[in-house]
Image 1 (cartoon, rainbow, N blue to C red):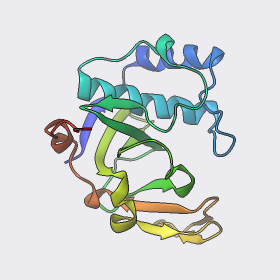
Image 2 (image 1 turned 180 degrees about the vertical axis):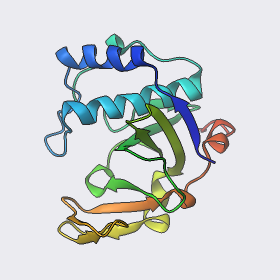
Image 3 (image 1 turned 90 degrees about the vertical axis):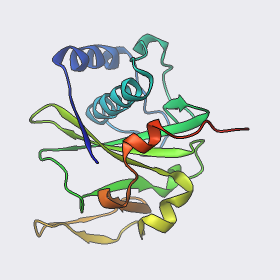
Length: 181
């Protein structure tokens, strides 16, 4: 089940102020514009609040590459991926995961969608990173992809697409057993 969370204007303002003096995109490839960093932080911070009951102070966040995960939860390293849209998601809508991030240090991927017109974050669900190849569809860089509206685009990177209907509900993540090391 997709969880919808209203995004408050003060959170957006706080993130915009933070991004004026911080750059989170320093991987060297697919770093993301300031807008993409804003959308990513909305997903990350509200997912963190959902799981931990609070949002961490952004000033505690380091600039640059985070090692490949955003949240530590019950011993699991979680990477939050947020896509901006102008509509609410449906079960057949897809989430993207670039293969170049497969080696990053995350156990779980949480996919979110930010409805930028209504300022609502939709937490679409989660998947263990090691299930991406089983539940997702692989597209090689350069593959021409048809959208449901009839338009096309070409993938810039090797990519997995995972439909919302193939994700685990976020409620199941809150009930997951702690990871034992």
